[in-house]
Amino acid sequence: MGGRLFGDPKSLANRIVDKEFDRVTSNIEEAYSTSLQILRDAYNKALRRLEDELKEKLTNLRERVASERATLELNLRHRVAIEKSTAIDSVLRDAVSVLLSEKSGEWYKNYLESAIGRALSEMPHGDVKVRVSPDDKSIVEEIISSKYPRPGIQVVEDPMIRGGVIAESADGLTRSDYSLDLVIRSVESALRAKASRELFGE
Image (cartoon, rainbow, N blue to C red; front, side, top):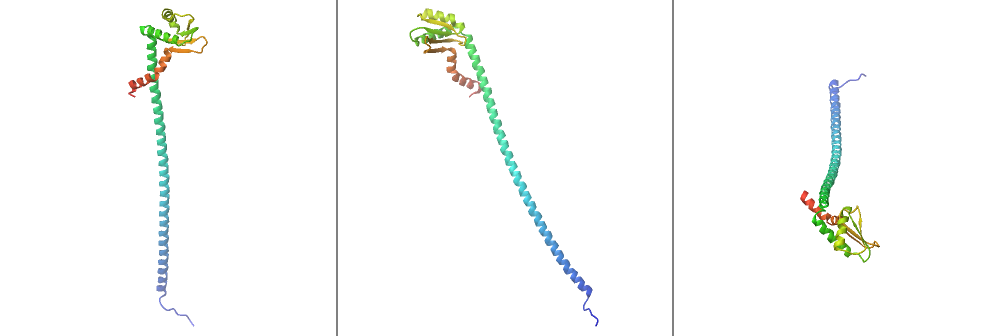
C-alpha cells in the first residue's frame, strides 16, 4: 500500500528552516552579546590596570622629583654656606693682615706694655721665659728693662707668634698667653657674626 503525504512539503520545509534560522540567529545574537560583554570587561580590566600602573609610575616619579629637589636644595644651601664662609674668612684674613701691618703704631706698644705687665704678674717667683715674635724682640726687651725690670726674665723669639707675648715659668707649669692670635680667636665668633650681617644681612 503506497504512502501518501498530507499537506505542503515545501511549506513544511520553509517552516522548519525558519524555525532553525530563528534558533541559530538567537544563538548568534547571544554569542555576540556575550562576546561583546567579555570584550568590554576585558577592556575595562585592562584600562583599570593601565590606570593603576600609570598612577604608580606617577607617584614614583613625583617621589623622585621631590627627592631630587630636596637633594638639590640641600646641595644649594651647602654651597651657599660654603661661599658665605669663604667670603667671611677672606674678610677676617684681611682684617688680621691690616692689624698686623699696623703693629708699628702707638696702640701696639701700649698693648705690649699691658700684656707684658699682666703676664709677668701671673708668673711665680723665679726665672720667666717671654716668647715673642722675632719682629717684636727688641721692643719687648726695651719695655721690660724700662717698666718691668726684674732678674731672670729671658725674651725668646718664637716665629709661631705673630704679635703679643706668651710668658712661661721656668718649670713650664704656669703659662700666660697674651698673643694677638689668642685675642683674635677670642673675638672670632663675634667678628664672623658681624661680617655675616654686613655682607649678607644675616
